Length: 304
Image (cartoon, rainbow, N blue to C red; front, side, top):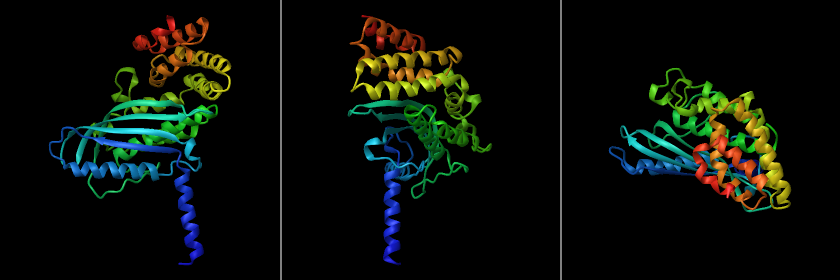
């Protein structure tokens, strides 16, 4: 092959690698295997890391320091056979904050309904228009949820297209999907607080969350990203953002996304506002107490 064309191919591949917007680290944990070979799961972990970090989710190129960092832990609770597994998926995605080394959590979640099959040697491939297998669809779905939340934090409703792809993944699931595999997806399998993949993306595309998404943008770009240049302005903007988010909560109090975000943003808000004035602390306390009442002990310091 002509050396010039070989060089072009190499440069193209490098650009693809630099273009990944998410830097994944995935661990597979299986403390109580009954049937499956532990080496199978070692290979699974390797294959998943390769798939997630080589997959081109979008056509946007970002610098390494701008990437979303995402830790995934696939916790296998049962091996139904040598190649069939039940698991939960723990997700923690963070976004860098401008002018600092601090990373802010943009998504933290545990999906308890992950059923999948895996045999060594198979290749994970993703196409938004075609169902491949349950695990691939789940991982791609959460990748686009994370990308959407990240883009929403830099541009008002900038993640719309990403949520659209996540919804498309839901819509392309085959009707023949087994009842067990469908459990984490279906509107009919929603549990307390509408906890299913269907409802998570439904929330993000629902017009009732428009103010929440605007608040999410202002919280991050106008708030967190200003913390290291003007903390007073940053806190003021964050309080205003929370008031916008609260309007969406009043319209959609059972929203899974609102309660999730209030949960994983609590520690950040407490640290930011402990040194703030009484009025701002009260505003933050009121927001958290309304949207995340079960976590009251985690933000009680804002009233002291």
